[in-house]
Length: 360
Image 1: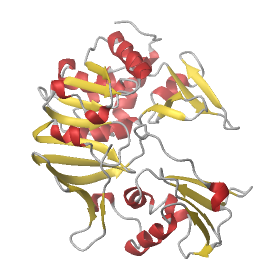
Image 2 (image 1 turned 180 degrees about the horizontal axis):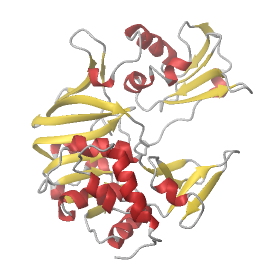
Image 3 (image 1 turned 30 degrees about the vertical axis):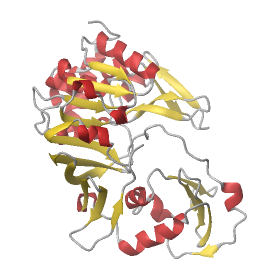
């Protein structure tokens, strides 16, 4: 096994692994210290002061420091310069891997191969023959396979829609996703063994559920997080049309959507995207949000709201504001799955709940 190294990467890996666990004992410390992240991220992109993307690779100033920092790194851009893949923040990866509660001999399915780094960590922990990883992007899968081969690991990696799982190697004792989802895909539940643990990003949080019987699972949310969404088509925001709408008034500050209501909003309208505009001094002026069906809203700090499309999005935000007086704790949200559907509920009885859309 050979890869670019100047002696500094081994020390950087050890330092990162120790920093991630904060000195506590973790069964994943050895994996983070052993697997060279720079092999899986030979190039990443960061924005300069003008917002233009610049690439960094081995030998560039700051490359190694960024690779072994607790930062998510953009690894792929589309033709318009929009990020389409990334190497996740290591501390979030660690939290998810620990929540997976994986043991040697478990069969593990990963939705979203990406760079292959997470598959390498799993392979180091349980053995590469026990790991199946699926991604829809052929170029990513090919590169990940090369990266894994470089470090001497050969899990089963396939190019396919990860939401369909990989039935030929089922059942799986553990299932993990490294792409943002709106609900847990049915095929992943079907391919999970009784008692299997599933850990996935859902909305702006991470949920851990246990399969109790076929078609049934339940669990709680663990922590806030953002992962790039599973690729799908959506309608562009209609800001030109929304600007022509007659404004209404709101008492909910637009900044609430970016802060305390960010997670429940991701349950109320899955797949929403938000943006903000600031004045020259950096103070928030207004917020825009839209959903894949084209519904669009803008909210100014003055309280002026404009909305268009199939749903009045800010009306939903106002309902959320009435439900939560402060920032809700993610651990108070539960996910219950049955053949009737998937429902997220808040609190113990009587709290708000949301039926999640089925994953296509």
